[in-house]
Image 1 (spheres, helix red, strand yellow):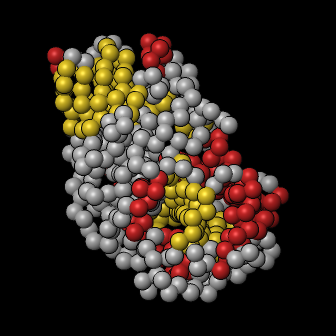
Image 2 (cartoon, helix red, strand yellow; image 1 turned 180 degrees about the vertical axis):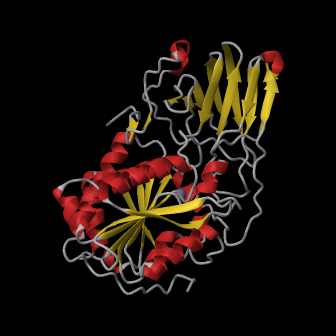
Image 3 (tube, rainbow, N blue to C red; image 1 turned 90 degrees about the vertical axis):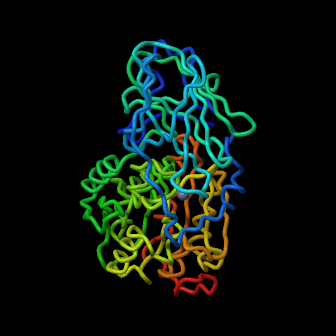
Length: 437
Ligand SMILES: [Zn+2]
């Protein structure tokens, strides 16, 4: 088992273990082999949370501000992209409570947080995280002085008690420290990555719509052309889900690689990639929703949001119905699990989904959780409307980068082998349980 989840995120966002800026912090903060149990509710409880999302729940965007404690020479702020901080209170000498509230309530318990602390001088600090409505701390803090090199808080400096209350001890140097649930991946990071992959495979890139706040929704497509069987890759409907994005990137990089298998695959299949469907949620530091607080992965049926409508319309323009031979939507949760559609004929022993799942489970400990297609999530819509074998590919929040990369490459290689020439035709959509036409 690869114990320490540190490495390079595709060479662009290094998470280093030895940072020159940290000598004074090392005693408290040297990243160890952290294996905190999920601080939040169990995975079963998390997935059981019903998320009403067909209507605008009326989210309020957080106020961007700075909290100043001049006597202590300390300032907190949530001014950075992807930051989330709702309040700060000094509760004692060197002790502060940081309040983190979701964009809307109730919401899936994914308590994303992110803030910057600036200190005039070196000093010790104790932070207590406070969440409303019995939400529990979920993500082990990631720390950075410069926004590029990130380090996970050491278990000796970070604890979550049985009630889900978290405490973080910091030994600050003069200057700034960023404390985030995960190293932020911003729209510009997605764009830089997409541009690099697109150049590698001579892909067409494009903007297919706009988010609620007017940010571009971007895609790129490459492979065998407009009439070829189509593979759909979608990601980041939910803002905090970094590990899912890392898996998406590893998966797509394998499809775009300069290998005989990938070259042959691109000669017979077209790949369409939408790596970031919820840019507003990412920039706003939301736990789950878009700028309106709507969970867009509960909008594949209502289509009340511009993000889902834009992708639906793009897929209609590409003739994706009946042409899509596989669809994957990347997410993160408490563990590695693939959700599939129970009524999908590709799950039968001679089906491509069955074979792909078997290939994955032969190598890795990944659950296959089929369920009837009743909810308006992308996977169900892709099966019920496009006729595609469809998977929600969930990566554990703390799955090490090396492991999730290995799984993603195996997922891509297995799928390329299974979508051999000619790829199996898409099934005729048949979805009586899906209540959306
Ligand atoms: Zn998700």
